[in-house]
Length: 195
Length: 119
Image (cartoon, rainbow over all chains, first blue to last red; front, top):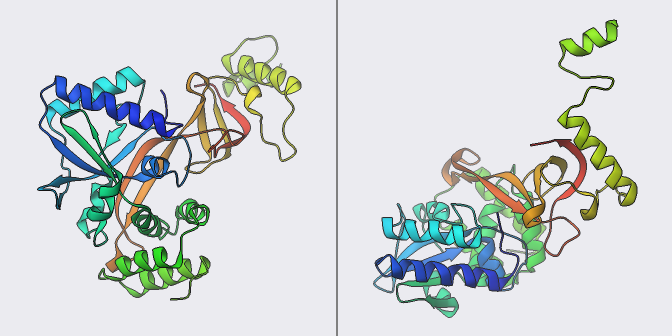
């Protein structure tokens, strides 16, 4: 099984997916993506990853819709692309859509428009902007058991004060208990930011 | 003889008996003679054998399967989503196969220190 070691490989896989979707007469879709592949595309971090995390469908150019499942035509195109590029069957997966349950940072869609790319006639992918990558990383770092690796990622990403404040504002907008707030304050303090 | 009988009871093959585990261990030892470990005990990329599980230090797990064909370690990683209202209660967990490169390669994050077993 292959993995994406380079930016170019991600674009190649998405180009193939776009072609396969067109051949399968799939409906036009716009998808907001995040995760390691997004970090790689934005040249923020570089590490091998075999998957692209689809966050949400973009409908009517300004609305986000959770991805329950892809259309059968798109599923077929994903499987065919996996075969062509020797990727795992779940290389393009909607796991991250769970983040929509609590809402995403304000303006995420507008910012991601800068990182949009059309792959064939029916697939458009937008990767979330650096500021929002930092916010999502901050949430991932909240995990007391496995958050360490995300904290390390944050250190490597060297977020600015504004980027961290943006993430904190998003996390503080949620209904949360004291333990959550304490953990957030601990992480932010560790990043050397005074809130 | 008693020792052999005890070994047989626990499924261990001693003496001249061949087993997949012994074969893998022998191949690993040969490679380690040619490509010495780093000072911190990490097994070099050139010394890895295709197929076995390795124990080590990784980003997503401490055990990984080495796939020489794609030059990648496969690990089982978990993404945990916690409920902010009832933190740190877990609201959802997704377990998936993840990839990590060897620590020596660009962007790599898995540092193997011990071969565990053949697949």
